Image (cartoon, rainbow over all chains, first blue to last red):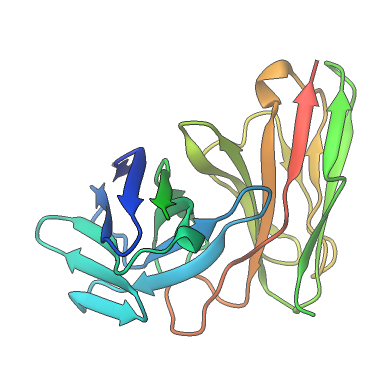
Length: 112
Length: 116
């Protein structure tokens, strides 16, 4: 019930391509879904986040698509660049709590 | 500069020797949390705190203790470390809990702990 399942575990994309990472959850109490980006040797950093009252949120080249009925959400990175090479984590939380459940991470490599 | 500072960055210890990892934030945040990161398991929340003297368990609290006596500090204590606590640890803080346009969870740079 508390899990957030993330796929794929790793992803290789050509420069300029689209990177897609998927997450699925079970707990319908979750109402905040952030994505974090982590570079080697650094802590995770918030990339973009969405609440379930919208189906899509876009910030620059990064877009979250949210499907409430399927309990799935995904991160799309358009025009992927080598500088996007990092590990990406999805997460879920319940408003008013500080309890977070993270996915297992996706290691993205963008080839130049 | 807004930051979450963890110390030490690297620590090698032996089984059973008590240790403390410190965490401090300079953003006057209410909320603070500890996570451990393990390959293939992602980030798992150990403990979190909603304010001074208010803490609660995350998903993997066994073997850890925390305290929040001051707003800026949230130390992680391993009373009797064991090899299965070898991991990469992150402290984080937020102004608010849950979703919100301006809610950002800031992470420290991490503490890599090896328990022999």
